[in-house]
Image 1 (tube, one colour):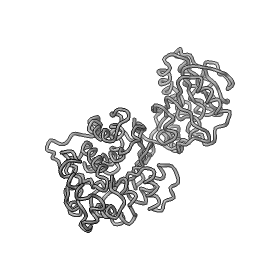
Image 2: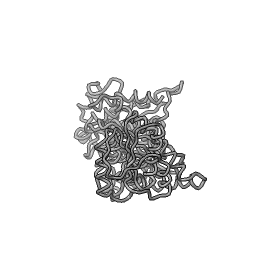
Image 3: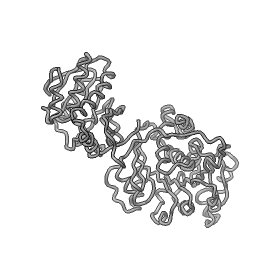
Image 4: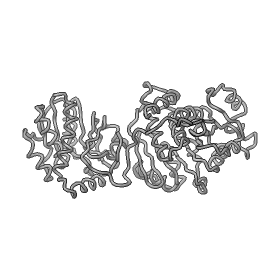
Length: 487
């Protein structure tokens, strides 16, 4: 699934555009309810369905769903938590040909459909409404949320004062909302599907990252035309090797590991920092590297002057000492598109980017995001989306705020969010793999924002292809198969 992600205000505006053009609120409710009813009908398999309707238009959607199920001969019960409070909800209830039960009714069935409150809710759920939700959810095998689970802030993805129930299916009406992709709400929604109603997203709306449109190399392609990526090694060689392995499967034609010391570093500082002489020897002899991954022991400052370089990745396994700082400074001093990850993000200072014209992608997890916010004098408040946007604007970097929910923000305000990926990604080294994939896409010629989005999708797809309980090396090995799915 892909498409726009709207705030509650943007969704209301998009609906108003349709209404101003002649589509009635009743018609929009019919589109939403009938589209949702198709999913509920298939999920029920002819078994009993209970629809809980609230007082607003989300409740009106519920009456439409129930009437469609009734017309098809399904067994459906409607419970009204309150009387309809909008004109469209009144009309929808009048159009339902079955019996409406009160909130005290005790019913059991196969599928519970939550139409209590939707996108418009901004207040805390009452104790009575929460108890009603809990009771009906417990009395049914499957749970479906219409638009959003009741009690979720649509823009923040946070519960409105009470714990969130778990659902098996959530049907987003018209467009996705930020709560569909942001934690903790996203984790409670089960499968996510979109029911279109004809709305058009406003310019500049965020979007859900979809499958990339990738192609095979041109008939006359060679390793340099496909992109040369340099991965700069550091104190922990394994992380850089892991990132490089992932990069090899994500499109770049040539991935090189730079392990040489810096021109301005003494021999002693190099041995104490990024790579000792013995470690370099092992890498060059192939004891720690696959045969098809080149380890370049040229002095780092000289290696970075290779004008064939299309991108550089620094951070995985870099370390945080003086040598690491020097290696980062050298990487950023050259006019090469760069991806900064891990230790590079902790070491980064605003002055490092002050004179830089080439693009930079930063891939922080939560701890690294906090470190960057401190470095750039940001207060770190707001949603993950707002924090990523603020950091991108002040730093000039494309920011990939990664984690269980991941957000991409560009300096100009573009926003994209990743869909939910498997929780088996919560293992050491998977961030290095992501950095390698993104850097490979950047070296291949994708613009920074697209490279970041492509990288997140390929990362999640590679994880999907892995068995449960996988290690980062297995994830890196699955990247070529994930790439093949996009051809």
